[in-house]
Amino acid sequence: MIYTGILVTLAGFAIAVASLGLTSSVNARLLIVVLGLAVSLFGIIGVINKAYLKNAIWRKQS
Amino acid sequence: MKRFILLIAVLALASVAGFGQTPAAAPPAPAAPLTTNDVKNIDTPSAADRLKGDPGGALTGTVGDVAVGDAKKGLTVADAINQIGQNKVAINFTWTLITGFLVMFMQAGFAIVETGLCRAKNANHTMMMNFMVYGVGMLAYWLIGFSIQMGGVGGIANLGGIPSLNTEWAITLFGKPFGLFGQHGIFLTQGGTYDVGVMVIFLFQMVFMDTALTIVTGSAAERWKYAAFIVSSFVLGAFIYPLFGNWAWGGGWLANLGGNFGLGKGYCDFAGSGVVHAVGGLSALALSLIVGPRLGKYTRQGKPNAIIGHDIVIVLTGCFILAFGWFGFNPGSTLGASGNGNLRIGSIAVNTMLAGMAGGFGSMLYMWMRYGKPDASMSGNGLLAGLVAITAPSGFVNTVGACIIGLIAGVLVCLSVEFVDKVMKVDDPVGAISVHGTNGLWGVLSVGLFADGKSNYGGSWNGVTGSVTGLFYGDASQLVAQLIGIATLVGLVFTMTFVANLVIDAVIGQRVGAKAELEGLDLPEMGQLGYPEFELKARTAGA
Image (tube, rainbow over all chains, first blue to last red; front, side, top):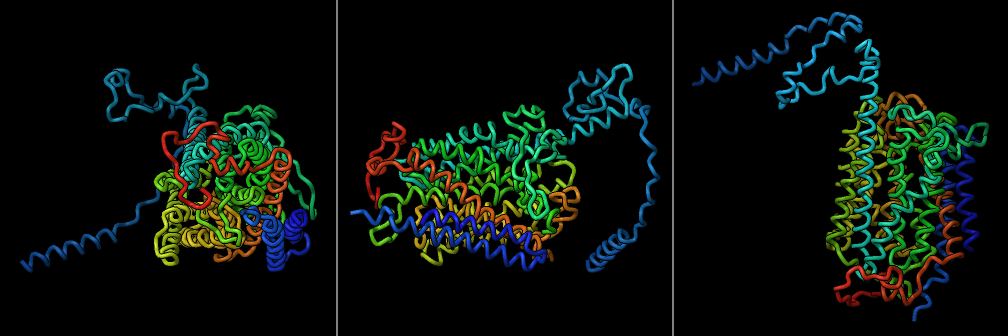
């Protein structure tokens, strides 16, 4: 799960940078970059953090 | 009596009208060109006068103090012009160095803020991390970090040019060069970098880098293995921070988004909301995920417990020290006080203090309304959040923009702390992720919104003619450049620091054992208690 999260987070960055080559429209670039940012945030909060929460230390406390 | 008052009023009106009717002064006659003879004929104070002393200061610093290039020729126009040039650079050197010294002192502020927010049983460990991160980061930066970050910046006019920092390694993407890292400046000797200007920019950039490193020590405090801290800090200071620093400040690809892709003036981060604070805050998040929460921070149901710090007095004192140091952070980032629009330092300093004030108010009022009390530690974090957020836009916005940015930061830090603590269940003892990460990103974004197009640092920024202008003042493309910077921080910088710390975790382990954590890290990790004469009692969950 953690490695998947790393890939998703990196993919978000790649989408944002790809906006530079895909279009020269400011509005279109804005949308693509925001999409990339959302993907990266999902990778961190939705995948990596979730993976750590599954085995969190407080779940094992007596 | 009435007549007398009337007379006075008439006289006053007449005088005002008189001022208004003063004829415009005739334009001055064109000045004759300065010749060497003019320079030679300037009177100097006599030796007899100088022997009497100079209590008024009028005799000290005159033509006699101008350095002469050739004693046989005496003082020439060239000597005078050279002295003017050297004075300009000397002013800028002095400004940059002194503001750098202020930023260095912020390490003390961070140290006591973090230590005060941690428990007394970890005081020595937390202080030692903050103390030694200065040396570890400096070593890493001197060895290679500075070269990566600034080795291809291509000259800094305010500091005399510095032509030797001129080699940037780049790839071509979408038909444009993407500068990735610099190649001059290893050991501050390689590639002609044994140079007075290079030394000034090294010192200034080094203390900035160290600020980013010390942010991480707060989020991982009270359970971070000291050896892992040393290695992790070295990697961040040698490679990860300098890479993003290069892209934003060292002539790299983010700075050139304007010139290469028509996005405003490129990624603009005046003093480092992104380069310093977001890099530090996102690294703090990566490390907090890896080391996990402190024992007792969450119940088995995942409900967070408050683990109270041991000294709010030093926390708020540290916040004041940081606010003081921020006058070096932001105004110092002009890298000069003379020439190239650098007199804007006054505006930058005022923006800085206003945003800090607004941030403190924002947090205090939010906590007061939500929880019934004006929380002291969150008020301090609100001040810091406002300062973090204004760091990127401080050179480009007006005072109203600065207050709005700071106020939003003050509320945002409270919301972010709640989100990190309750939703993500990530343990951050000092709120570093929210103060520096969340608000660092907000600061970067706010440039793209609030930059008012009035600043003018020599007529261009990042090589693009004109002033930095945000969406609210008519340039949406600047917002896109800022968002690409944010996407890089979140998507790439976070990943780099996360992977690096995963490797360190696999090799030497990031977290101390449970026994040491419960006992407090002072003895197991450092061999000495922070407060040996105190009897420490367990009063809070996980204590």
